[in-house]
Structure formats: C-alpha cells, structure tokens
Image (cartoon, rainbow, N blue to C red; front, side, top):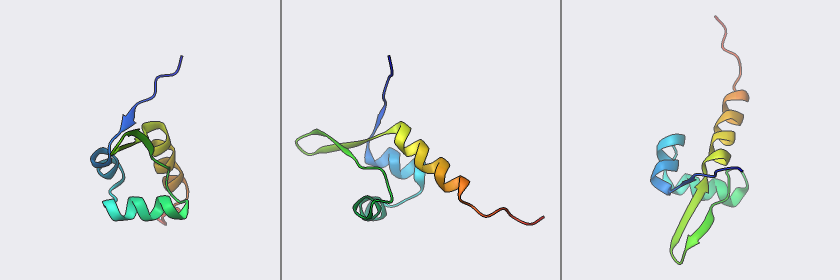
Length: 66
C-alpha cells in the first residue's frame, strides 16, 4: 500500500524555490507536475512528483569544473 502526501502551494514553493506565477507557468508549459483538485477552490501536488521534478533538475545540471 502506497501512501501519498499532498503538498499545498506554499510547501511546493518552499521546496522548489519557485514563485506562484512560475509554478503555474511551468505547469501550463508541461515543465512542472500538474496539481490535482482536492476541493472546490483547493489544489495540491503529489510530493513524490515534486521530488522527482527536483531530482530531474539536479541530474540535468552540468558538472562543475574543480
């Protein structure tokens, strides 16, 4: 049984460092996980998808020269 944790926008912004407008802009362009509707005026993101997005960003960095 898998337990899914939902993150609200302030938590997503805190984890990613993105501002609200950037989160929604990147969602529209397909470059950020989609939110899921959890109420009439409420949305949340799956924590696992946010973690995967962060991991992908880290993996796409160019190695720094030492």
